[in-house]
Image (cartoon, helix red, strand yellow):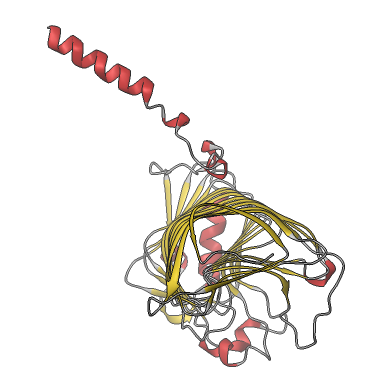
Length: 410
């Protein structure tokens, strides 16, 4: 009896001394735990797109998907929209509109393909292919494939406006997981004006030379956690732009692509605000940038409270970069008196190899210098193991631990 009592007291002490709510995490992790949509495994209603005539035979199945969506969205009880396995369904641009009466789950077990006929996009040429608009408490999952058939658009990218593959617009309490996305015309997965989002186990693939094919794009979205994703594209693996707050990206495998980027911000003298971003545990291989913050001259606002930690670089051209003089324009960008303020940025435990001589590049604004930049435990070398350099202009920074290469000029 005494041993059992001792075991019980020991376990009780463990529970009190290991309260998960008290684990020390970056504050961006401490999000509202209620945001993750419930599993809805006890859905009372399952509607297959095949029930409404979707054939998966190469012809357009858009109307069948729309009809099936209307049924699940109008259901008074939780409902599931099923995209069956072993079929590939072709869709023109479609929007699945909310609000819905009850929780909805979309299970993609088969494949969904965009029409490769440019005429199917019509004269309006929409910016979206598959769009969920104003749907709360939504789950999209299933292990299937979403294929944007982007090759036709990449070849004509200067002549036609491209569409993002899968967009969630103004959705709250959203979960997206276990999907494979390939060859989007433009951005693969976009979250716009959403709140309380969990996106995990997403595989995104497009050719390295494909234009504007960002993996995951976050804009005007708050409280989003992106975890366990493999992203190989022709543009940013993850791009975080204005209006985004409390963004966590964890366990990200990126490359090829343009790295993990905050920005661009402040284009056209606009105001931009990004805060509370944490990138923790990432591997970047063969990317043109590693972890990047980019802002246009003449903008205003801020990018602050940002942490990049536990990042491994392999053959990355610009491993650590802040560019407050970003200019993606055919015309020269002249020096201006305003800029998006960059502050409170921590780079911690970042190591690996740089494909360029300058491994740390802080090119900040003369009028609005970067400040409160902390480098901690950085070890970057050349691909051949040789030394690399830093360029640190108009930046107020500090360091802890060993920092290689060392920022020697301000």
